[in-house]
Amino acid sequence: MKNILRFICVMFSVLTTMNPLLAQWVQVGLDSLDVHTLAFTDTNLFAGTHSDGVFRSTDNGTNWTQIGLDSVVVNAFALSGTNLFAGTWGGIFRSTDNGDSWILVNNHFGVTSLAINTSGHVFAGAVTFSQSGIVLLSTDNGANWTGRLLPGSGVTSLAINASGQVFAGTYIDGVFRSTNNGTNWTQIGLDSVGVNAFASSGTNLLAGTYRGVFLSTDDGTSWTQTTLDSSVSVFAFAISGTNLFAGTGFCNVFCTDGRVFVSTNDGTSWTEASTSLITNAIQALAVSDTYLFAGSWGFAGGVWRGPLAEMITSAEMLSTNLPAHFHLAQNYPNPFNPETRIKFQISNSNFVSLKVYNLLGQEVATLVEEEMRPGSYDVTWDAGGFASGVYLYRLTAGAFTETRKLTLMR
Image (cartoon, rainbow, N blue to C red):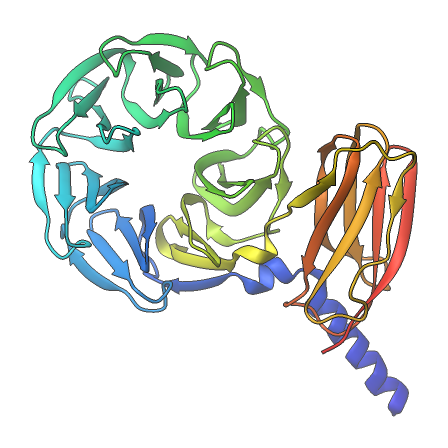
């Protein structure tokens, strides 16, 4: 009997530690609603939906209140000081009281995207009745607007990089760039590709498309496809420190199989942050101090929440002095609860992997998986979602491999 009970306990431990990321995702509200966009400010989380208006949560998504724009399709949010802008199919609305009241500041049809530069200028991407693209600009918090037509299809997404250049993604005509605040536009790549989302990370510009993620390191002049699977569609990005998240789905007849991927090197390479999130594709992401929020399409949609600490993989470089050899140190403290630090050394540039396994050899956590320069590094593993027990952690860099044990004690 004791052996049977021990076997049951071991199997329960394995099942609960094999995939902690999946186990920690929770649907927190707006069930069956089609959530197009999310925004987080202070303690307020906003969700824009497909014809049900705007909802607000003040407790990380546990409870929601409908706060306006009833029966309006809300496609995008943007924040500037106390101003919250909402881009909708019925125009651009502004709230200065956290969504309690809204004012229509532009009635242009089909506003799909919003972006604000460091000067507080608001850009809005839209589609016209003739299905061409247009970018609107306000330099006075929405009081007045000017517009410029693009020589392409409707605008789906906007981004502004560190040097102030504005990028517009379109339904089928790739990416356009403006170097003079939207006065003139030039088509710069990804011809015949639909661009759903942008992210500006460091010197890199990322484009989320129906064929994965494309990367430009030269302000959009040239593009390369990243390691994210080209069979998935990318609809949203979010940034937390050095971690870049992508919300995806698989689109055939319907867009299903929502997943989150994470990159720690400005989008050059990607790993899956959760094996499966929800039934439908993710079309919105937002980050708070402790959670990553995902908005999804339709009948199995709504808002989902996952602990940010379980999805980030960030190794801090301790020294740029070149180590003489590769080395994986014993974690400290050990035993630990629930966090421990792991130090390692890389003697030459290599693709580095640091992973944690249970005693059955099953991978339970990826701490590092990226190209790294020579140096000494320190990474923290938060095992808050794991069961007590002995685990193995393995460092792989080129032909070098080293494995050590660590013990989690509750």
